[in-house]
Image (tube, rainbow, N blue to C red; front, side, top):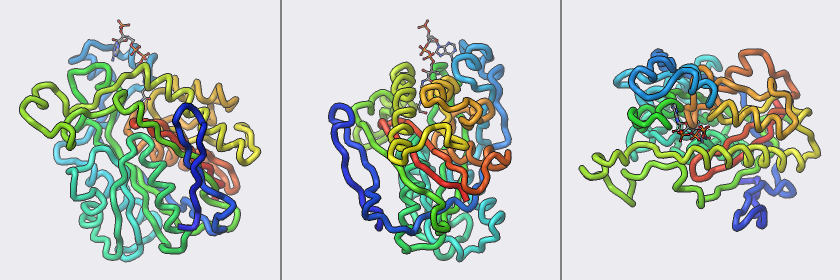
Length: 353
Ligand code: UT7
């Protein structure tokens, strides 16, 4: 690994921030050279949820900005969605089965706890020359996987790394819990990382975790702490639980704070950014973050109305929308930012090529 890491303390309580040590950085960088996505066909609009839950289209839109989400068909899984996103990416870039070196899959809904979803995607696509693994960082998963994958390119160890964000959230959402059932959806996205031209690509990142927030967004059972029993099933503990208000407040302050730290290090202002690609949890979080940063709201990418919160897939879905909309041109500065369960927090600065 050529980008050294230094631990920076004192950024709030016992929180430590992990930043790349640019003084030792290898000038070789990774660039995002392709993006593709997949979402299931089935559209579930708010009105459909309001037929079985004590909620309304109006509450969901005004409190979250979500109008509809995609829900996987029976038989669809995180690996089938992820594989389809990778297949589309490879087709778009004309890559064959021997052309991908590494597959990093961010997800909190793997098909199984093991083997890794990366192995299932490799097998489904017949990739002949790849190694890979899953990465668990919830809503920041794609961002952390991007940083991880970029190191393989920056070090010169590998030429082509595919980073996937995929989650079948419908597998872990309690259909009887209106506080979470309206928020999430299913989807997948993938990006290709290759060596960047000098001055372009993934320039820097600020990531940190704060495990004191672990109980505010989690799935209580199914791990080594509480293996599955008839009791955990009866108590509905295999579903996601969220303390929405706490996570909301944390997300608003930390998304803006993370981006500010990143911008400060490069003597940039938010208005220097062509776009911010944020994790899509709530339109109110996106608007508040844009306002805190002094970023025009239209530069804050948003696809939440169509897809809801797809956890690890939100960043590639939003990036794909921005790229397809022709909103990024060569040389533009872009920031990716996410806050999620853990808590996990991060932002990444890219000069688009
Ligand atoms: O992606 C991972 C990170 N996750 C996030 O960033 C999510 C952050 N949190 C949020 O986005 C918001 O907190 C929610 C959308 C989850 C909730 O919005 P809120 O404005 O914070 O609502 P609240 O939790 O304060 O609840 C307000 C009221 C409550 O009723 P009372 O106690 O005031 O009578 C809730 O029971 O709204 C009620 N409520 C609902 N009403 C209708 C909660 N969910 C619903 C619902 N439909 N679906």
